[in-house]
Length: 602
Image (cartoon, rainbow, N blue to C red):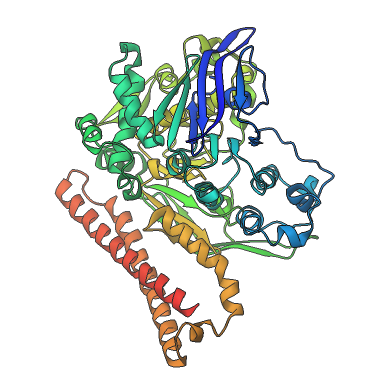
């Protein structure tokens, strides 16, 4: 492979910290590099030095003659005076950019929901981020450097970006470096991982899963002080090996070595024990949404808006559910119904007497009253012990022990809350929510400002939290890791996703294609379906939809009934869970047939 960029003897330091000490790296044609490490260890600084945006204090960066580098910074550099069109394609005539398939793909993948002629200053922060990314990707570069590109992107946009980067260059050409905490994205697009730690950059072969395996091997030989970090990494490796088939089926690391490393690691969650403790804390009734709907009244600027309709959701004690949906689909409204902050305009919400709901929001309101207090003062007024699940028994942890599990050092206990980093404030916010001892926990985009190690630590803590957990997140890895099932808000309705995130992406693709299908009323005939066959296919689709809905309702009721079953009857619980799995498998088969038919119909 041809050499594109080299860095030799790079040294970088600030008045109170040496960030890098004589590091030497190279980037070759075909490199697909993910950069990981703790917040504050220098990931963004490394990217900036390699891209020529920051000068090192010593050492040098050299590039092959003619090499071009495109950079996506975390900072917003868009010109407010421009329209979206000007920001993305500049003064390029429409016939030129519209004739470029890659430019059209970028615009459709990132900006299809935006007005092409809207002014940049009218956009939200997330929309501006998408415009900046589109402006970068529509141009030709030999190397692309991306600093947290998935921030503010939803699951669909992240999936599109991964596919774009994988096909952007031919094999063995071009290169990119990406700093991100999105572990699914790292595993999907990267063939090499650089870990930034302790003033060095340590390379690992493969994506995130391969990196975890190699780090576990390294940590096994490390000093005793690394034991805690090692155990969390081994637990994460166990999930990667036992988890989603799409991940475990990829030959990204040595299967035998991985299995040997995790042979003594138990399942990540003791589901039966967690559910038993949840029932003890919650009782049998949690929150039931019964044909619930929400319509917001008309305003001077807009007519009435129906956000949710006919939502039937019986939430069980110990349930761990992820919620998917595009921005504006109604996810926040749905969670508001569960939390009681929003009242339904149709149907009703039935809430158990012992239910205590707490929500980790995207804001840091919970910390406002503690802004000038050191961390130790914040936790000093809290209770002395809090209950978590440890195997088949409960375990009491002190606030200090919980802080340690969330990565706070002894020195940081004296730091005022206002001086903590964004990630530290987010972790402290989560701790205060947990220490309120809710039995229903709602997490709204909890991964913001977290590095991969801290995300693993939070996942480890949530694995032992005995209650009902509802999660909204665009971080696919986190969502799949901490929840046992996923639902989506689609067309104002709540839909179960037996196929998880992949099924959601298929449904969204069909939803996007629906207007085109309606415009092509003769598409079925063009695909070889005559009028009679087309009607038969449409009739079967309707029957499938009714059957899928019926089975989904049965699964929901069966899961709810688990709470009423004797929690000591492990055999009986196992039989009931087996029956649920069989129904979910049937739903998945029916949905595959539904997809086939809808494609034929056009």
